[in-house]
Length: 416
Image (cartoon, rainbow, N blue to C red; front, side, top):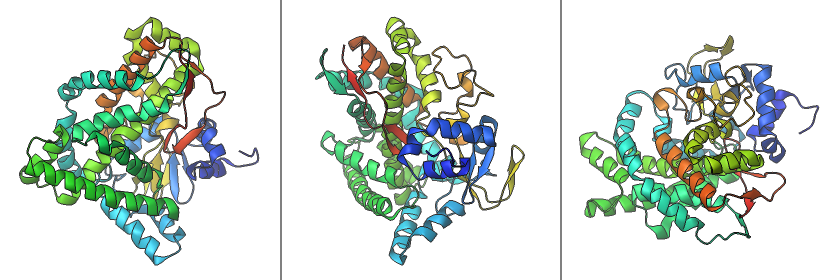
C-alpha cells in the first residue's frame, strides 16, 4: 500500500479485496482503530473499536441484521451495476438471502433460531467428537514424515464433511457443495458483476439441489441428518416456509464450513509463525481448548459483520446517519489494546477471553460456536500428536477469499 494513502483510502482498498491491502489487513485495521471509533466512508460506516462493535452487535433495534436490499451499501451496489438485468440479478440474490438466519430480525429470527438450534445443542455437538476424530485421521493418513504438504485442503475438508454429515449430504456431492459455497462467498454484496452472476448461478443450483434433498428426506423419513430433521419437523409445528427451509440449509452449509476453514487455516499458520507456540501445545495438549479461543480472537475468521441503521444513532460519540450501512469490525475489536494486553500477540494462556467477539455477541451469537471450537481443538490436537515437528516452508502468507472471510491461500509445511 502507498504511504501517501489516507486511512479512508486504505479501508476502501481493503473492502475492494486489493491483494496488497489484504496482506496488510492487520496494519490497516490498527491504523483505522487508532484514527477514530467510527470511520464514515460515505456508503458504509466502519466501526473499529471493541466498545463500539459490542454496542452495535448488542443493539438489534438500532442496528438491523436485515441488510439485503437496504442501506447505503445496497444502494452503491445497484448504482455500480450497469444494466437492468444485473440489477434484477442483484435483487433476486437479495430476496433469496433475506431468508438466511444471518439476515433476519425480531420474531422471524427468534422463530428460525429456535428451530435450528436443536441441531446445535451442546449434547449433540459433543457427540460429533468421534466423527471429527475419525475424519482428522482419514484426511491426514496419506501424509508422511519428511514430506511437504499443503494443509489448507485439510482445513476446508474437515468442517465440510462434518456439516454435510449434519445435513445428510452424500460424500459424492461434497466438493460440489464446496464449489457453490466458494462462489457465494466471492460475491461482496453485488459490488462486482462477475462474482454477482456466479453467486446467483450457484444459489439457483444450490437451491434446486437442497429442494431435491429435502423432497427425498420427506419420502424417506430419517434418511437425512439431524439438522434437516429439525427443519422438516418445523414445517408443520412452526410454519417455516419452503424458501426459509432451503435458504437456511444453504447458509448453514456455507457458514458451517467456510468460517471454520478460515479458523483452522489461520490458527495453524499463527501457531507455526512462532514455533514456540506450536511446541507449547505439543508439550501440553490440555492447553489446546483455551488456545483455540485465543486463536479465534487473534484470527477472527469473520473479519466484520454488516448491519443497517434505520434511524440516526450514536456510537462512541460519532453519529451514524439514518439509512447507513455499518460494518462492526470483529477483527479490529479483537486486537483493541484498550481491552487486550499485547493484543497483536498470541497469548495461549490469556485470561480475559470472555471479551473476545470472534463469535459475535447478543441475540445473533454464532449458533455454530461450540462446533467450531470442537473441530479446532481436535484438529490441532491431532496435528500436534502426529507431526510434533511441523514447520512452515513459506516465507510469507498469501491470502485468499475476501477481506470479510479471509483465509490463507495455502499452508505449506514440512512434516516431522
